[in-house]
Length: 186
Image (tube, rainbow, N blue to C red):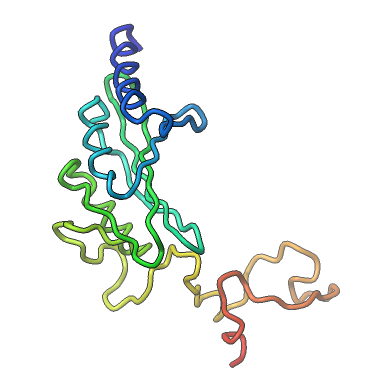
C-alpha cells in the first residue's frame, strides 16, 4: 500500500472515530461502528462520505429472544480499509430505514435479509421475494424456524456411538435442533 493510501485510510477511519467516539470498537483488527436504528442511514452516509464508498454486503444475525443484529460491511478501496456498521432491531417489530438511497448495492441484500429474517426495510423500492419459491411461509434463517426435513428424514451423519441402527448400544432418541416436540408423533 502506498504512503498516500495509508494516509487517506487513516483519515477515513479517523473521521469515523472522531464523529462516533467510543461507539467505534475493534473486532479482530477491523473497525466496528454500533449505532441506534434511527442513526442507521446517517451512519452509512457519513461512512461513505469519509471514504468507505464501496458497499460490500448486508445481513442480519438472529439474537433470540429479543433482537436481530443488522450488519453492513463497507470498504475504502483507496486505503484498503474495512468498516462494519451494526445496529439491533427488536424481534417484535424488526424495521430499519432502507440504505438504498445511500448505496444502490444495498437493494439485493435488503431483499434477501427481509426474506430470510423478516427484517422490514422501510422505504425500500422493491421488497419482494428474491430467493424462495412463491408461497413460501416463514423466514428460514431465524433460529425458531422449524426445519421440516429434519422431521421427515433421520439425521444422516451418525457421529456418536449409538446414533445409527448398526447394532451398537443406543442412547435416548432426541429430536434435531429446531424441531418442536409435538412434530415427532405421527
